[in-house]
Length: 454
Image (cartoon, rainbow, N blue to C red; front, side):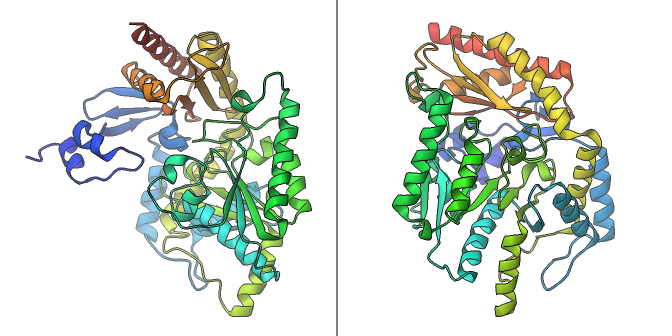
């Protein structure tokens, strides 16, 4: 009999990024409520949430200010659309704030509902832009191995993670892949980080030459690769990528879904790594994950060409029913005001300094830890079988998953991507909660070390 949340979920819910057969037997962890930086499950177990849910909850898991804004907007104008020259007060508010924060000159903001839709929109705009310039053959998109850009058909095609492609029989969408900029794993013996960057740039130039610059519309890249393992590029990488793409008339699309809104210690990841994209996608932190909203932020040079072409044919034929929805826009606008009041980039740098200091002290020499990396208030921990040789674990052992489960047993939520532990906490954490988070992770690593020794 379906007499519990777990059994009802197991009966009816087809979950994202989950093994469905395993779920039929194991069921879900049902989260019942949020308390600041903590979440509480249906059994009353309390967890310090070190991943912001899915890289989202910058302001924690319950916020009265945002709840009041949502309720007020629901009572004022609960729904409307932005097709055919319509708009609404919160929509104007949020696009204006995004444009003010954007590093892209003359930004225009196209609102959508998810990071996947924002990335799809950027790709469609790149195609539209090049056709409008009389260059319809420029259709290929360069992505990178290990990248994650969403789960829609185009988003998955852009992804460089094998499980996003396997068995889906995706159509050919002219995506080619550059190397993943991961010095720790891909640097050669004796190679310096500078030499590694030189090699990455040479590989990109070779890829463009082999494919033909006249066939390539854009390159998409996360400033810090999130689901690909919290991977930061080597010093100088992005300015050199920017120069190569400009020289070859290729647009640069920055996927800021994880890095945007202070996460890397600046408003956007492109600020942190010293480049200005032609377009960028934003989501997650835009509303602190409280409501579904995202956007493609478009440079003026792209917008002007697209607008002229749309005027020529009579309409820009792209959009979504909920683009600029008044309730989601109202919440996102209030989130951005909150970020500005609290100086989110500065807060990320302050909390991040504590996080990395405590991680190095607690687990920097742990036998399972190969590298601790990241920027701002975003960290990744590489788990290895042999520290000195940088030998990875056999994937069949699922060591990262073991660590994730032991973290929960110690009252801490993190996420494992294979054998990388990712940490992306809310900005409303206290210093003592940062310490609590690290203590739980260290205890989990010790547990797993003991279990593997048996």
